[in-house]
Length: 282
Image 1 (cartoon, one colour):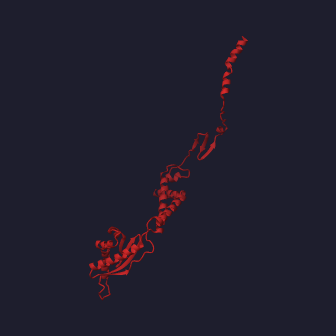
Image 2: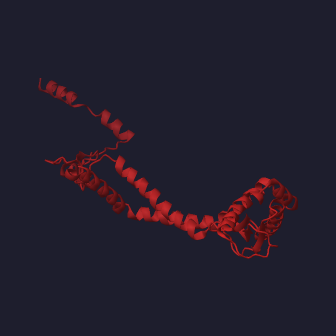
Image 3: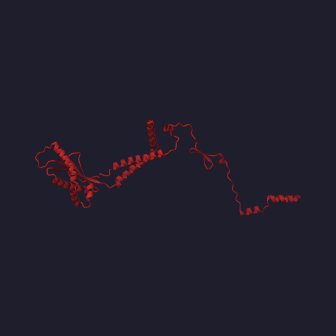
């Protein structure tokens, strides 16, 4: 029973796709074009500037260059602490004083600080609508964050690996991603719409296999015989004109003028003629 239900479901799904392939493909193409237009001309482009720093558990002034596993683990934990240190109200307050066009909340939303592959390397990223502003904020944030870190950790050290650079291209929106997502959504949504229409349609179609769909044998079919108002009859989708209606003469219309009607009224009627004739015979 479960296998029969599964085959029925697959058959219905395939039938919907086969019968509405062209409309589904057209909807998918339209949705892909909409995604392309949105990513190119509508959605504002965002630019990200990044800097990378390395965090150590030891001071740079120490002569030993050998780090054991405990120092590496401690440095990795310090990276998680730096994510908080770089976004404290003190750091963001000094940053907001330099970039007064943005509030502290807006600056906080621009900044992304994370560890690179769970290592002791720290990544600082700033995203804005202007590439030059992104680089300026990232540069100043790196300086303020390193200064705040050194004031908190006396024995630890933080070193700049790569300075923030001017982004050459936008990071969001991605044109290929929006196009592919639009294509996928167009396929899925249009297919679901046609599937719902097919499922709510309770009419039995001539090409439906009722035995496979419902397990009920078909013993007879009733023709759709319908007489139209114009004297023709319909069978299924074909219309044939009735011979009697086509040969039926059209009623003739008689046009009389006022003079003709008056002359006709002045003529003696048939009853008057018969009465006059009887008087002559008598």
